[in-house]
Length: 204
Image 1 (cartoon, helix red, strand yellow):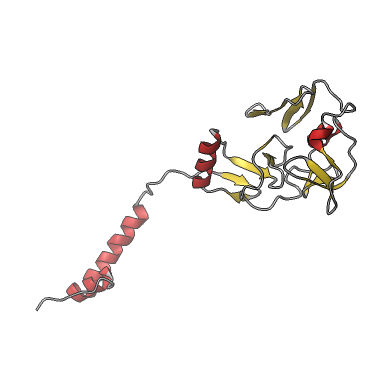
Image 2 (tube, helix red, strand yellow; image 1 turned 90 degrees about the vertical axis):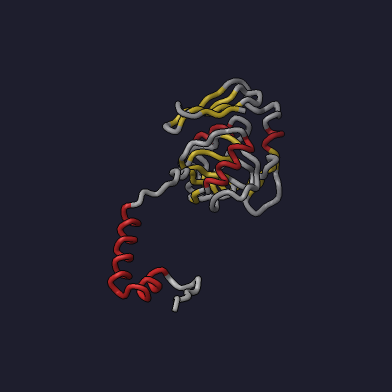
C-alpha cells in the first residue's frame, strides 16, 4: 500500500517514514552542509543614510531616476521643513523638495554645530552662519525656516523672508567664498551658489 503525504509535512519527517532515522539524519547533514557552503547570489546593497537611517535600494533608485542624479554612498542630513541638505557633519550644500519622507528626524548635531544658531532644530555649521551674514545680522538662538524662505523665532510667527532679504539694498553683494575641512561654499552675490569638497560639487 502506498503512503500519502500532506503538502505541509516536512521533507525530514517524510524521509523518516520511508527510511527511518538514519536516512532522515543523513539528509539533514547534507542539507546543512550545502547551506553552509553556498555563496549568496545577490548584488551588494547601497549604503546611503539620511538622518541616521539607511535608505532602501528601491528608494535610492527612485530618487536617482526622478532627479537624473547618481548618489554617492554616504551619510547625509535633510531638513524636511525647507529641503536643505548636506553631508553629515557639514554645512548645507543644496536643496531638494521639502516634505519628503526620507530618513529619521533631523538631529541637532547633523552639521557638527558649535555656532549656537539653530534652524528647525539643526545647529548650523559655521559656513551656514557665514552665508546668512551676507544678507542679515545673525544672533545665536533657535529659529524656523520654511520651504519658501519665511523665518522666525522657534514657536513664533514669521518675522521675515530670506529670499526677500537677499534682494535688499543692505545685503552684501559681490562674489564670496568660505572654506573649511568640509569643503568650499560660495556665490557670485547675485543668486548663484556653489559647493565643492574636491570629490562632489553642487551649484544653483
